[in-house]
Image (cartoon, rainbow, N blue to C red):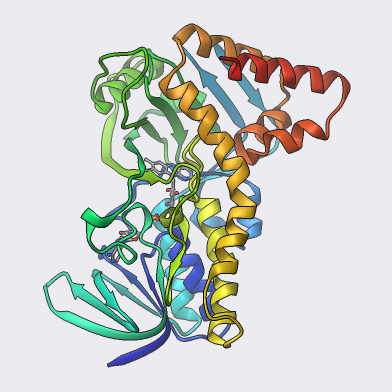
Length: 399
Ligand SMILES: Cc1cc2nc3c(=O)[nH]c(=O)nc-3n(C[C@H](O)[C@H](O)[C@H](O)COP(=O)(O)OP(=O)(O)OC[C@H]3O[C@@H](n4cnc5c(N)ncnc54)[C@H](O)[C@@H]3O)c2cc1C
């Protein structure tokens, strides 16, 4: 039986980054992915702020396009912000994950594509290949990086706790240069009952005159809107009524699920298993931004794994503590705000909240949408800006 220091199950951003970090330090690492190629589950819209590239030392080859504008559109209001410099990028999600896996190999690790982990027992990981053959691998540490399915920690679906579930689907469409132009370098978000009750919609640019048009909705009833349509209905509506065309080529439809533990009550470890990324709800509930946080958590976990392998710790309790210190407070605030906006508020209320964002500069809106540290930010600011923010928050948060 083959033996590794660490088997990482799931080659998403979390698993790829964790395996990349550990293999760079000389540990023997196996990265396992159930899909045979990264094109097969190319589900993520993959927008991220600029800092992600430098923080994780990512090359421009994984970037589809930069973005430097932001727009929020409700039933009645449009607010936009822009900068002359790039504010972030939209990844090519397949290329990002392929790059991480390639790095693992270049650093002496191994990657098994097309192998599903269906069980683990103590130090043994059981893998089933697409063609059915079973492989057993021995590992000192097993990493559950399987995203929302958490399939190492919970191989039996019936024994999983309850999560808040959101479903997202997206079209990748090819359009003419003329249609593409207003969306180039622009992240457009749609809110409100008309565009996407129970969630939000988006248009993100890709390279080669391609656009990603998507909808994500929480799988729970809305307090006001009794009947909602299919996700495709809302995507078609954005393309028809906002982009204003029926002249496009549908290249791909993809999507996935987010299962998020409200209050971050996930199980972070059990025995020699440690969970990372969406498997411990690192995705932010407000806008579904998860890549950066999955990779960040993976780095924190990789340090804990090193200490475990060196015999300095015997469990991953400190890792759990560290993750909750970093994420819990701002993630819980994001949940609270999101559940109001997506599941409770009237359309007029959403219009009003987005209208008040006009007081914010581009840097200020970035802090809210991508830093999530609402209160820390508010405490540090004074005078005019403080008044702007309190007005904004009063309009979004008052009952
Ligand atoms: C529609 C949609 C749009 C999104 N848009 C954005 C965005 O614009 N920006 C952003 O930052 N985030 C976005 N996200 C969220 C982001 O994609 C996730 O948070 C991120 O991918 C989580 O990374 P992960 O590695 O934890 O999990 P995943 O990316 O889900 O990776 C888990 C991997 O594990 C594999 N796997 C599962 N079970 C097994 C098994 N038993 N054996 C072997 N392999 C297994 C899966 O095939 C998968 O490849 C979006 C999500 C969705 C659904």
